[in-house]
Amino acid sequence: MKQEPFIIGDVEVAAGSRVTVDLPAADLYIHTGMNLTAHVIHGRRPGPRLFVSAALHGDEINGVEIVRRLLKRKVLASLKGTLVAIPVVNSLGFIHQSRYLPDRRDLNRVFPGSSNGSLAARLAHLFMEEIAARCPHGIDLHSGSNHRSNMPHIRAAIDDEQTRRLASAFGAPVVVNAKILDGSLREAVSERGIPVLLYEAGEALRFDELSIRTGMRGILAVMRTIGMLPQKERKGGSSVFYSPTSKWVRAPISGIVGSRVRTGAVVGKGDLLCMVSDPYGEVEEEVRAPLSGVVLGRLELPLVYRGDAMFHIAVLEGDVEGAELIEALATELSQDDYRQPSP
Ligand SMILES: [Zn+2]
Image 1 (spheres, rainbow, N blue to C red):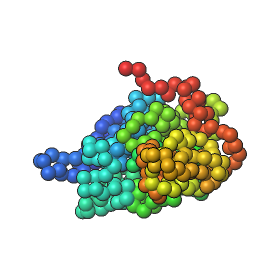
Image 2 (image 1 turned 45 degrees about the vertical axis):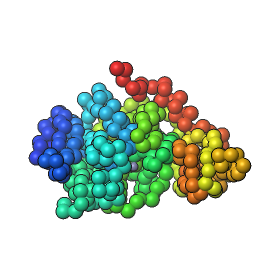
Image 3 (image 1 turned 30 degrees about the vertical axis):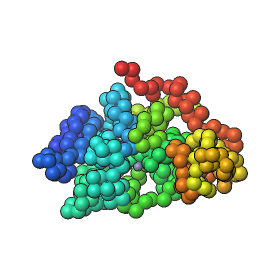
Image 4 (image 1 turned 30 degrees about the horizontal axis):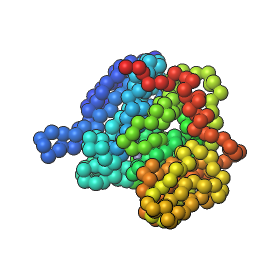
């Protein structure tokens, strides 16, 4: 059975075709416009509809690369349902290599937006009306901001069984039960009953190969789980750990940061995370883990003021003593076919 055409903006996408659609988002002051551009793959046969969005924060570019590689996958030829991919939601931020829109607004704090609000509010509104309203599943891709890097993880409301199932299927090593931020896409979409997975990986303005591969593999795995792609036999796969809570460790003094534990390292309460010292080595202070868990994120910039957030530690459910989550994942990913296509 062939499915009905997919309508987005004033474009009708026929079953079994793929189209890049420009949705006019705003007029700029140079007599040109800004679009929200979506790539729609509308399968021949009916099935679930999923959006994948990236660069709501314009400097978080790992997701852009994840989508670019995803759209090249041959398996999408057998897609059931509809994939709507928006690799660059905040295109002005992306051009300026900035998290924000030109008015310094954070797009991920103005959802659901409004049709007559600020540039950010109107872009959010357009996304809600044209994308979220048409797709009952969503994956939003992010990276660490402000010199912070994250190990690949999913942030989602895992009390919801459906969300938990998809979060686990994604296959990132850690799933954090994260509270929803006011004004975020995840909040606006969740209120419409759409389970959204937020994937956090890597650092702003950098490509991180492990983050990109984990993200692309995760999206394909979710698509298989909800029936958009044919099921694949599972080859073992590394474990997914749930984290009920996480905590930031802050700098005890202002100073220069010595060698630090890596993201993905499993630490015990009291373990040394790094030293902070003055440039003369006269004042030195240890930073120790206040709880046991995995280093989910860390500050890459080795210069801190007292109170700066330095390490993000996630408490893990289950026994992870001595495990190297990132190494297990890296080993697994280098063995499969999720490599960067050769030039
Ligand atoms: Zn972000």
